[in-house]
Image 1 (cartoon, rainbow, N blue to C red):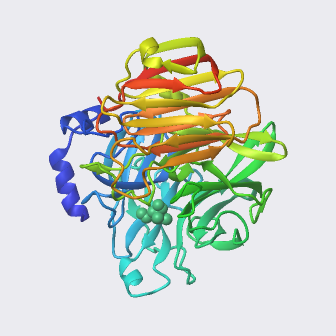
Image 2: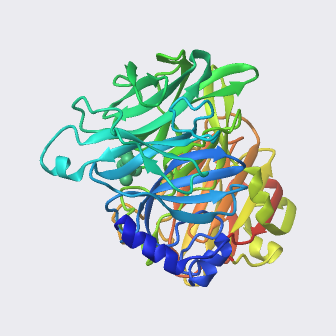
Image 3: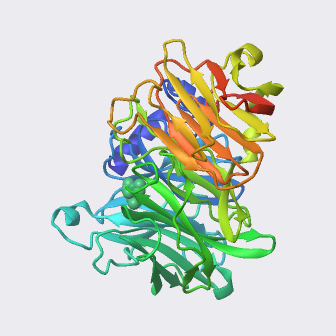
Length: 507
Ligand code: FRU
């Protein structure tokens, strides 16, 4: 879509202030499989979250967007804002393709010291650093069709100006050279760009976001390499006063359950090189449907992560009509130590509590064969479920409808893994690899169980063992699941189970 065409359209549709109105006025957000507690764009295609930055009490979420189709195409940056990470307001498209190419993934920073000189009149510039992907160059067989560019905003992200001297970081001849994630490295008073460069990461530094110097490269010889490295992130987390650096590297394909997934490394970063603590491969989310996940910038010590809730293996084929894809729930990242390993933990952000409505609790349940619907009533929409047990045993929760479609989520003690089985979950035959049982290893070797499930109309997110075991999966039942049953051949005793219904963010 051209910028002009788009502006005419936006003016015609204008004047909806809240996301709720924006959704319901257009009759949107009622479609079958439409997520109710997750962000999704109003229409058309979305993939990676981009440019996530917190500024002036607002969370900005930009995203890979193709407004003309529900299939991936010439990339724009769509835009939404939120005051609480829960309710989102749609904003006009921020960046349009131009003569240098499509606008691929990247990040945004608040340049509070005006190092870039883009600020004026005392206004802090928001600066977006993104990949220009030139489709003509790609077609012509060039190896230098991906380059890094800048755009800035002086009105809180509402309108953007592309830098006149783009690109600012030219491709040295690496076909996959993209997805810059930029952070301010205060100890060295410089910007650090973490860039995915085919099968490794290259770090660059800059005093002003415009001039970049290569610092180091890492990753060819460790981690998962079943596919190309994409969408990295770099940030420190605190573990009892110890600073541990986390390098996130998304990879496609080659994920633990097929297709796209997010791996991470722990280590040290000194402004120049990243020294990993580990040689093994670790995944932030073992499920099939969290990809391109990275964190918000400018949030202080809190690190909030958001992923695209799909997988390149079938993202263009999923059975939704007017839109395709959603994001995961935002997650707080933390650290847990298992033996001498640092494990990155994920937990749904507390802000989601604003959506809680009625809550039903049950305690001391013999889970051998238990119909939760009889005890807790029907489910008919999004909910959060929290389960604890003093002694973990194999168990399976079955969420089902009355036409025989079901999603089974459980723990297999012999295999020591959690699983989500969507083999008979509803519409599954749009892609041959979709109908599967996916697993995540249990890393924490402890007696008790703590499990949180966040369930929307077409997705489940599993967080177990203090956030060390995480899985995300999407599904497409022909009718919303309304029954819950739990079975445990080993007679799991559930200490407490709390089911909290959640209201829609769009209605
Ligand atoms: C990841 C990705 C990025 C790229 C973008 C294109 O999903 O392939 O590497 O910038 O999507 O839409």
